[in-house]
Structure formats: C-alpha cells, structure tokens
Length: 116
Length: 114
Image (cartoon, rainbow over all chains, first blue to last red):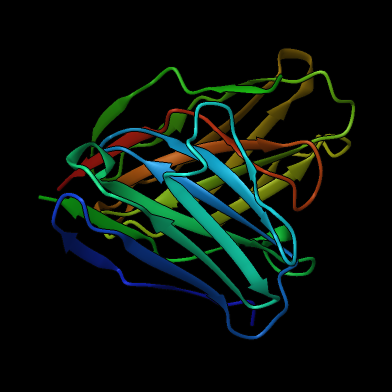
C-alpha cells in the first residue's frame, strides 16, 4: 500500500515550452504533498508544500510563477514548469504525506526533465 | 532552522568491507525524526529507517545498522560486509514532525567495487 505514481519519468522539451509533472497517490488520500528538486550529484531541495484545496507554500527562492503547483484533489498534485529554460533541467521528485507507511512519506519515482 | 550534514561526499570500498556513513544534524526542536534513504542510479528514494528523538536505541536490520547519539547529534549508518548492490547515494534527513517536510543532507555516494 501507499504507492505514489509520478509521471512522466523522463521528459525532454524545448526552451520556452511548459511541462506538467503529475504525482498521484494510488491507494491513499494525500492531503499534503511535497515537491523536491535535485541537481546532478546534489541533494534534494524542497521546492514547495502542496496542500489539497489551497495554495502551495513555496520555499524561499523558488519562483511560484515559474513552478506552478496544483493540488486539486486528494490524490493528485501537479507541478508545471512554465516557459522552461535549460537551467530548469533537473530531477524532480514528489512525496506524499501518509500517516501509516514509511512513517509519513512515500516518494514518487521522480521525473528527469531536460530542456533543450 | 534545521540542518543535516553528511561530511563524506563519496566513499569507495571493496566488496565485503564495512562502511560507515556519518550524519550530523542541527535542530532546535525537542521532538524530531531522523531518516536514512538510499537512492540507486535509477533515482527513486528507498526508505531505510526512521528514528524519533526519544528513541536512542541502536537498530540492526540485516547488514544495516544505525547508531543514534543524541549527545553528539549524530545518526550514523553502517553497512556491514558491503555488496556491489549497495552502491548508491545515501541521504540522511530530518523532520520536525511525522509527515512534515524533510531536510536532507548532501548525500554520500557509496561505491562498492567487486
């Protein structure tokens, strides 16, 4: 139980286009989801906390207009990278809050975004 | 503010050697949770362990063991008799409450050579 599905696993897009990444909790309801970003050979940095039915809370330095987060249902949160540029290329991974499994965290498998 | 430091960026060992990964944390909270995750080359995060601040018992799970020392704010991880499949990046992480956002350390890349 407590599976989080993240899609796509890999995406290549052209500069200036937008890319949407989905994070779904398959067998539980997630009132809170977290979005992290990881640069190559670096650690995971929290970008934002997504709460169902309300606006996301962004970490300092993260552009909310650049990284749009929508958490419209208890099982789906999306991250849209708008007007992507090569510097947005990174590994994005979501995590859903779950009270019984892994003591609160279930991670998606991640999305590797390459902007060309 | 919370902070997690993994001083070792990369460790290379030969198979069957033991390897210990260091993790030092900083927090002002009296209640907190510590985690270790494994990230293989495929990228997904594999949960290894969670410890809460009130439980200082060391834990052993197969070839894995963890040493939590609250007095030194450390939560070290040892892999005994390492195997090639242990090659991965290992992250130590901290949260102030169950299900709260995680603060990750910089990670330690472990390379186990045959």
